[in-house]
Image (cartoon, rainbow, N blue to C red; front, side, top):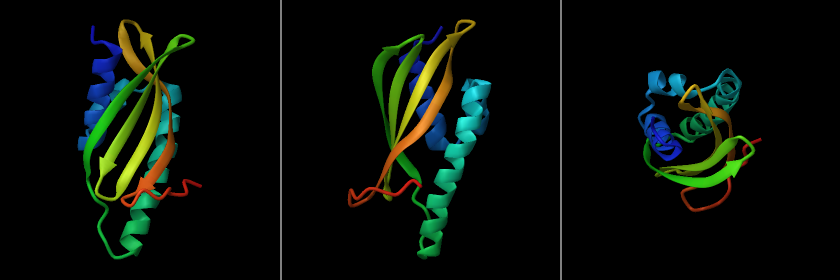
Length: 121
């Protein structure tokens, strides 16, 4: 069985490469609903870039930061990086039938390339 760190690294890599098949395998039903909300937030940011006359920058890297246990979950912060800025996602992982799954997630912050915060509202 993969460790939570290995599972989170694979998840971040699938986010970077937009491997939808890999992402779908890791979500619990509860987290899937949260992922759909987060996808809408990210699409709104991409639409802003397009409206400004530029293509959204691809994800160029990520950082996985294990924060430790919280109840029966493991909390992991994942920062996705691009030339447009960074986005921080908090994920909560739960071991289900011997496999680590994302049980909850939220986009908690985003910054532009110059470090100014992005309004996620």
